[in-house]
Length: 387
Image (cartoon, rainbow, N blue to C red; front, side):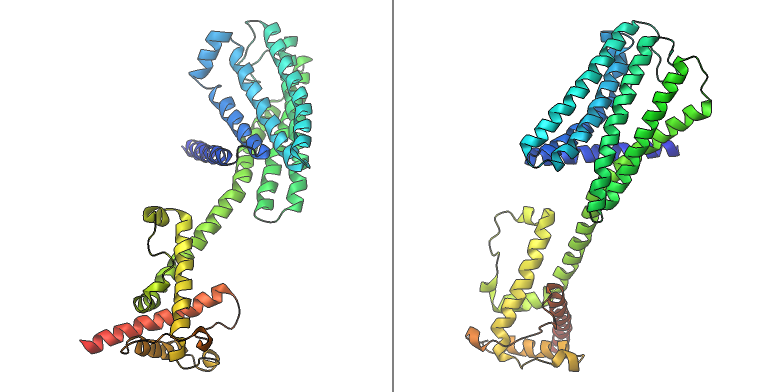
């Protein structure tokens, strides 16, 4: 049960990662590194799907008993090739250099693919086990098949491991954390391929391989693949979580600024930065819409305070000396805006109102939020007094 849940969760995460990369590739089709990552994930998906029923049965009926294993391994080789290409494109000085290195590595991939196809044809319609443990390695063609596949995988993974460690050392978190996790996964996969190569030679020579060694090799690869996927997904997931945290904070401050904004907006509606939105549903549904509304509200509150500031008492030094500065300023603001007719003053007559002690935008918003809280209390007090 637990294994099924883990497999299902990893499958969902993999599909989400693949969908996201395809979406990014549609937006930037000329990004060679992004294209390599996308093709790597697509190859991994096909290598998994085509080894399962009913796809494996369809391939076997069309190409013979060894065809499913051949197709699966070709996609596995393609997966590690594109993984290596991602680093080649990322490290290249320009696109031409990246393409040149990728073409050179494609030659090794083509040789490995030819070796697998030749070994499958030479093995004939017999001795095609379901997996490494169930295969009869007395057949030289079958031995060649496994040796070619494992040697190329070990080579490509070792190259990817070298680049992953180099990028991890030069990166900052969360990217570095994800790269180190991916490096451990890649290193474990390379170790598993190396072990399988040695076991293939040992079994070919007629020696017996201890079951524990074969089991350990399978466990290593079973743990390495999820760890690699977690490492690849971690930076993006961490970035998304941080973005969600910022968006939640902006939404909270947006609503907290509501009373102050409402009072100033009623007095000076011409300060609105977005009076006639072209796509209001899009502004509310898309993640960036919340940030736009938040910054508009902050700017509109500041514009309104600058407009009304000549009618308020100077507040310099008030915040350090009087903790109740927000309530005092809210009373002045309420009185000024509810007078007969607030008069606009020239910009030169504007005075600082609720200014923070630093130039930080976050501190500025916190000052406005404290004033907005005081305005809410003042409005509620005025409503009760009227009643």
